[in-house]
Length: 367
Image (cartoon, rainbow, N blue to C red; front, side):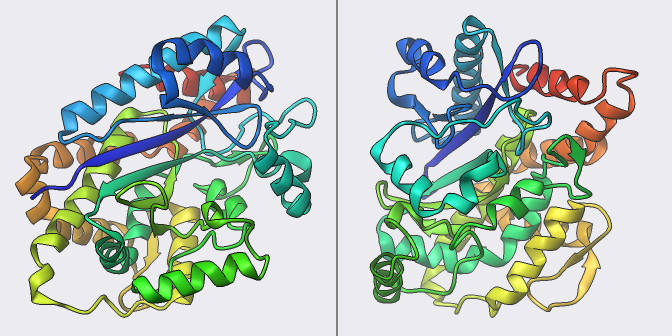
């Protein structure tokens, strides 16, 4: 059986004239919720909104849902004189500090983790993919086996080369910035009992405020019957979002079909995985990567080829194989989101980073 699929995307709201983030999430969400209901939600900073699909079974369905969500949110943004932008980081820095969304939980997070919040360096937008799982044990089985493939998936979704108004030298600065938060890293190998023990210890010790702050790159959802993957930047090109989601479901479907073989999860220590994600964040799918299975430096393209091969049985079962090859080929021809942001700056003339924001805003609602 092919599992269901769901996607959450976080977006920036930027001023129509300055292209800098602005704290207008309140009226934007109010307007968008008229059409979307609870599928549009607030985020930590008031310059961000999140949209969430309902569980989908086909690539066509998830794409259509995401396109509708983006268009409705973008229309609401325009009504508040701002643009909806899909980028892992703010290209143009805010003109003034952006306030945290005024909820008890977010206020408490801001107090407890003030050094991570001050200065707005933490304004980052990610794309989270949920794959259906029967129970927590199955979600952890999938997380344990998929974790070595996540650096290659991250490399495909890099879309945050600029932050603070400068080129960071990374393809995904979001990964670096978000990595300052506790547990924002590869997940350890866990079964149901050890997950419960670890989660309780993290909260009881005060390292985390609550279980919703477990930011491991692969984790069982606390609220849905899914395993959640949290490695991708939000991408303006909807094709990239769909590609990452389909590859993740393909991997999970393959693993579920092989579950009776009781293969142990790959031996990939967290420090090695952390280094592999760092390579992916810096270089994307070009140049060298760190092989999570061996620890050796290899061409990044070889890991992507291996990823697609590993997901192939599940992709075929879902009817997604041809679409994934089409989307992957297009991405490698056109470049990642990060490469396209840099290209937009290169051809901007005298408009600089504002041209990059315009490129992102246009592409975010082009489907």
